[in-house]
Picture 1 (cartoon, rainbow, N blue to C red):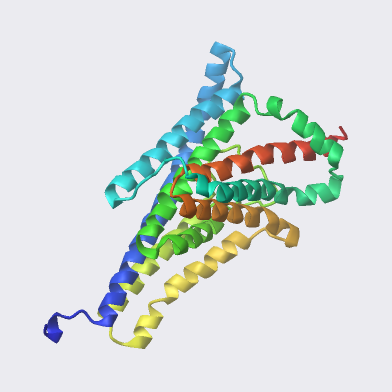
Picture 2 (picture 1 turned 180 degrees about the vertical axis):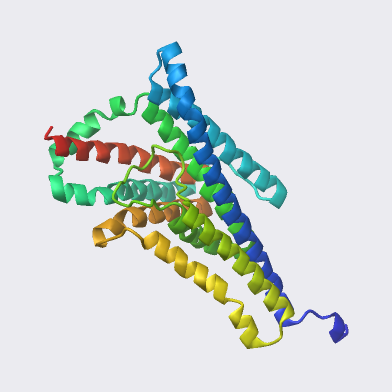
Length: 321
């Protein structure tokens, strides 16, 4: 075979980088678009909930949770299904093997522990004790009634479809399973962490997607920077020019870190974003070990149920119950 027909090492690296850049761009664009869609569903449901509640007698909060949850899951599920069909990625729902029992148990326990992490400041401030936890456990069935149960279902399904079905599925095409799990957790540090970390509300608004206009602009800069860097890697021979082409990406990463870190005034305020990233990581590795979306769904369910209990315990401590 002639040398003219043999791909160079640089050409092969460029193909790999281009593939990674494309998947990153797809993930970022999909998450930003879905965040905008979720905001639109909230605006659309708000004026309808009062009308439906007044005409049917159903609690308006339940109406909003059910209506918005259905719209959000429809959007997330539709995008995930389209992505799976277009990019030849599966969305497996098979029951994990018995050999995966220990992994599933560890993921469920770890997720439940993570649910308590954001409440550490409240526990230190209000003195959450065993009696508060006992009361919260006793009242858990009542606390899960109506809208909370709907919110938990939307949260669990939405998180598994969004971060494992879509994000991890995209990364898995070009990074491999282990690296895709790590990349998914890293992506959640930007998209799943709340703007105001002092409010640990976990499962009331469906899957975690916190994309402000500022974060969307930084994400757009990141995608454009990737396009410039990939083009330069393919077309430019000068090493210094190729290095300079990476500056927009570096700038976007720095701005992303500043955006996520804004409002964090002390170590305790790191607990909420850290717990969220850790949860997505736990779910990601459970998905790697089982190849079933039911595994991350179990982790998210464990987190959601434990979150209801620990939030109730903190509330009992606050009001002195």
